[in-house]
Length: 341
Image (cartoon, rainbow, N blue to C red):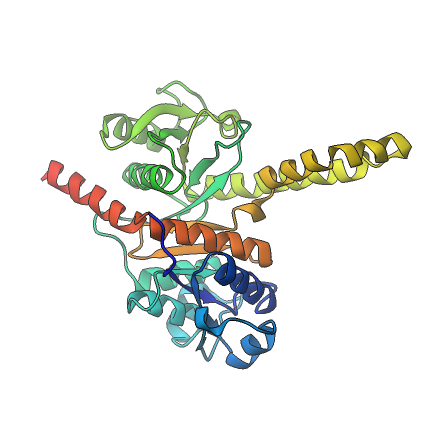
């Protein structure tokens, strides 16, 4: 189900390269994807970043008086700066003036603003940040959640993450029957701490998901799982490590392939292949992480995001809206509550 009327509210002041790169990625998305972008922030700075001949039919500048910086405590800043760009962007979703929101700014502030402005979905105790990793199997990514929203998670939270992740994997990533795993120190169901043991039992008994067992660290990029759940502490460490490994491999390729005449010839021959390698490994190709569990479609990007990442995040947000992920999540939890009542 496609749509050309999707409206995306964008925190234009969030991120290391705001507003220039944010605006550039958003304008490209408006042109190539047909979405309407609502650029939230300082009107003068945003207007100065607009390229010549911008089609203003699909671009709107929404004024915001303040911005939240990376060194501020997120919850206090969100409460204190009511007119901050991230708050204004969330309000656009709450008021149904936008269908989704994206920010590459302070991720903690984005999550706090989403919870305070939009609230949690009924039946969800804690939201989770989900991000897509490439795997050894081409065209088969894995969704990892939580990667930073919750430092500690109860077994019940992990079960909820699995249901939300499975729904997203099915309707946005196109996996017919997502295979779900629990990140653990061993594949046997008797392995792990008390949280892992109890979570394994809950996942095993949940008819809403296709749980296939524990996933060890070496399984994360194997392509044998479509969704892997863990607490936000472990997930964030995993995310940062995977990004670093990808950057190291790409850097090694850059340094080693051009060595000598044979290397230069080989690099020229392999250039199309190397481009595909970069596309599979580079986190910029995915653009952002989805905040699942709040009553709105919210994407959080890297602070270092540049225009290509912004474009890809908006593309993914549009896909989430087009495939009615929010409604499907609500429906899933209405079913669970009916079964348990």
